Image (cartoon, helix red, strand yellow):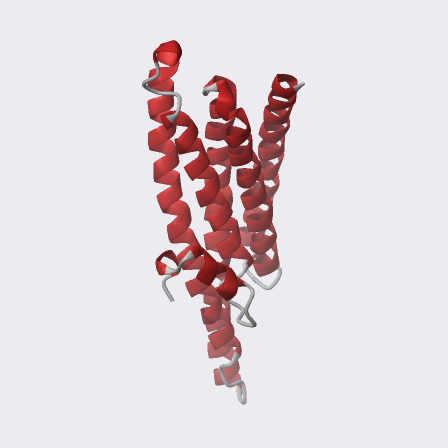
Length: 209
């Protein structure tokens, strides 16, 4: 299934179906893609307008960065959908004797590692996006401030859901060093993301008061 070839309605129907994929990881990545698209929109509605000439260069950077992130998020949505069936396949492997148990365990660990990597990358990109979106909030066309704020919150949602997906896959991994490193990175990113969200909210609420 190619998610980027589905209509919005088709994607929602697939997400709400009884199938395990697409699931939360793909939904998180799609939130990121939508947030990136909103940031790009704000940049395009600011750049080129004479009264915002002093931020044209900044808006061009936001546009390019946001469009790149949108592409990456869409790719991650697909990667997440492709990764989880590998976990299910590993779980279905036979385990009648020690050799089969060892092969099954190795396959499962490999699949879980990939299933952790994808949402971790979504989380990392979400931090990049929320930084870009905050700049769009504060320097973009004031008429688009709520669109930029929407990008901030979509990035925040993407980060939160992606972090949950990393953590549930880590719970079954046996590589202690990898698990502890990922947990530490997840916690640090979420703290930074929350700080940026709060700063953006304060700015937006002041503009709307």
